[in-house]
Image (tube, rainbow, N blue to C red; front, side):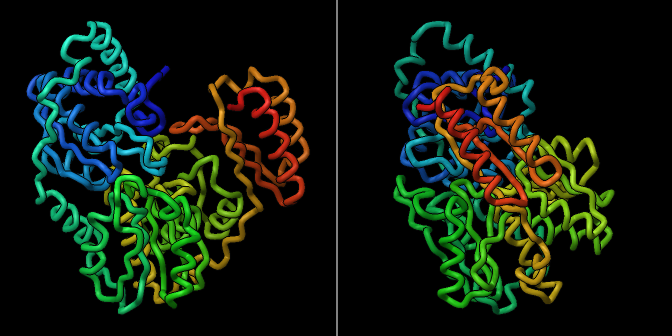
Length: 449
């Protein structure tokens, strides 16, 4: 069982274990050792205040373990995956905590093939980290003077922008006005250049990172912000990204928030119409709304569900042969285009669907009718198995018995934060709220901070 890696890398408060200097250096040594002699590692980071020292410390550990490091500087997570694969790196590493607050940070690792590491490999790296740490403090504890950031290769960013534009040939804004919210994160370094290459008016917001304002009242955590901007400016569409831009949410022409479920619906129908939706299958997760499943059925599309986490969506896609998958949160996977979720690529592909259809985004998803859904986040001090909490189990069973075919109950721990997520979906909003609050209250009583 993994101890350090969550569903999307290693995350913690920057400066605290396992993101203290000694452990970060050990992670670098362990990764280099796992990769083998002569390994080359591509590195990038988002805009957090802690990014430079973590990157420098990790790079020092990688060099100590025998690897060489090249930096793309501040850049999106999927850009690092792209560069790792394109240039034959042994691995790609991103210093980012995605949608988390600025005090948090993280380390994400991609293989040389551009895909996230399998669980078994992460477990092996964890064992190597423990071995390195057990050797004793030595130079690794002190953080020696070679903790310098690798020189940034600015050409990598331009190369990534070219890749995005070439992935969606003929893309155009059709002289529309669009609003882009960069979350004061990694998209700030790429999105303005990317979208200004298209024909239209681009209003860029939240693209002035200061190290502490990433995701703060903006970005994919707050899609209502870009939606309000679309309405206020009379724009045709809005895009909003998370801190490392591996996911995107949208706003339609009326200023309504459009989540990943709706994006999958629009893209699946477009792929189906062009004969490119393999097996008429789409892979979503346990969090996707029952309304999406119903809309897919009307179009003759089968929806499979995977555990939450885009790496698990991709795993199910590989098993089923699906050509489209994603999460309600905005991680959308187009394996014919990229190896991982890419918010900027998703935005271009949605623009392309709108461009070729002659319809607005709102028109493309007008028949998606969602069941009422609530998600309550409960801060927990530990992640004990839920089935070991009798009171919680009893309330979950009661909710499932009452809702049966008219709703769903999904209770899980976050893979990236100390949270239990209580999701209830039901035709009855009253029953939904009642059960969600009861289960959340029981978890809080047992495990709450």
